[in-house]
Every structure is written in C-alpha cells, then in structure tokens.
Length: 372
Image (cartoon, rainbow, N blue to C red; front, side, top):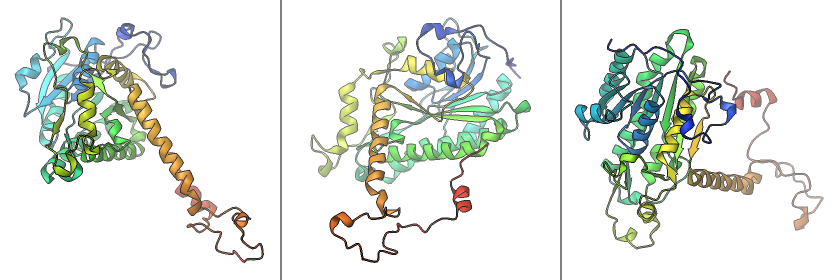
C-alpha cells in the first residue's frame, strides 16, 4: 500500500472562501462547528470543466483524490501532472489515472488501484458524459448507442463494481455517490433527445437503487447543473471547448432552417459562449459540501437556470395531471347535471373511473414507500 489514508478530522477548511455559500443546515453540512473528516475521492471524468473543478475543490479542502481521465483523450503522465502545479497539491494527496467508463475492466482497475493506494474510498463522483447535438432522426445508431454506453452503462459499471466494497465496509461506513446528471434528465430538450434519454435512464437507476442500498448507509445524489461557465484561473491558459462534451451533427434538410427546434440546443450554447451564469468553482464548492454532509438530498440543482427550468417542467406536469385526472377517479355525485343531464338517469357504473376500488390493505401495500 502506497499511502494509508487516516480517517482524521481536518481544521476548518476553505468554506471561508465562500462564507455565504453553504448547503441548508437540515442536511448537516461541514462548518466550523461541524468540522469535516478527511475523505478519499475517486472522480471519473476529471478533465471536464465540472470534473476539474470538483477535483480542485476537494484538494483545496485537504481531501485525497484519485482523478480519472479518459483513455482516448488523456495519458497517465498528463493526469499525474494535471493538478500537481498547485502549491498545495503533492503526490501524498493526489493520484492521476485513466480509464474508459464503457469498459468494466478499466473501471475495476481504477477502483482497485485507488483502494491499494489510499487504503479506502469514501466518495465516488461520476462527472463523465458525452452528447450529440442534432435531431433525433439525424443521429445514427452508433451515435445513440455510444451516448448510452458512456452516460448510462458507464454509470452502471461504476456503481456495480463499487457497491460490493461500500456495502461490506467495516463499522457500516458505507459510501457516497455523486452522480452528475443534468437538467436534461428532468425535461426534454430539442436537439439532444438521445442525450436526454440517457440522463432520464441514469435518474431512474439512481432513484431506484437508493431504496435498495439505504440499509448499508450508502447515499447518492444526482447533481443537475444548469449552464456552467469555465471560470477556473487556468481556463485562459488551458481552455476547454465551448461545446464541452458535446459534438455537433450536420442537420438534414428538414431540420436545417435557422429556427428549427432541433437546433435549439446548439443555438443556446453558442449564444451563451463563455457567459454561462453558473460558476463552476462555486458549484464545485457545494458538491464538496455535499460529500461531507450527513443527510444529502436525492437531487441538487446548480444554478438559477436549472432551478427555473425544472420547476417549470414540474409545474406543467402537475397542471396536465389536474386537467386529465377526472378520467381516472369517480366523478363527484351530481357532476354533469349542470350540462342538462336528467336527475332520473341511472348513472350506476358511468360515474366510476378507470380503477376498481382497491381494498384498503392492498392500497397501503401498493403505495408504501418507507424504506427504513
């Protein structure tokens, strides 16, 4: 074992950089009165703008980090040197590796090497992702399958290979997953349909899994950023592409008009440029707090765009349910008589909804969601 990570309590660390930026007290976040314990992170997708900022935030707060790059984009040497230029970062706190999340063996190797190096893993953050900008009809089978292989199967590979370790840890220490989803996992966006589908799949996977692993003290949060700008100090010297992890496909003729809905995603990204409203540095600070809080939320939305867009989407769903719910429940007694129906008319069976009445005990079992 190269480095045995002690489970030590750290001095109050740079929450002071953003003293006003803190998770709600209801989740018991780290603070001077609740000092954090040093944690060991494995960050997949550590070369993207959010992954890079999360790694830096964890190192700044004296945590230990394995930063994982992509085999087809990064080398071991580049990953080892990526954060070593910072004066506070040494080989005692940072390990750079590479893998392809689509290939289970490489994910398993990263986890094994991290445990061998640090002695344990406490937090796994998956910031890896890949998307194609183009109409659903214009994306070929390879494009769509590759998005699912990276975004959904990559996440599933990480979870399935690490769950046994978290589940079997001594003293019920469990573990923490921080899975970077997207607002596209909560609403459909024209121009990135298959990408949205992969994020919907990830959200369903994580939400379902939490019920299964809660007894093992394993927690997970879906992190849903809005438009995040690249505001790290080295962004000028080591810039990331404006389109980040997205690639553009040339639209076919029906979808090539200037106002075609399928071009919405590309127009928005190019219009914003580097002026996205949400700071990657501040978002990463909240993600670090998330890893150290005792009662993490299922979802953490980052940025006003994320909050407003998801809230509007949920509002529209609620309104649609209310508009159509009468098809599924018995109509109130006397309903419809204002429309001229005869009071003498036998409406037995006509005022019922789609469902038969449920036995109370069966209904309790069906709708029980308590996992404790």
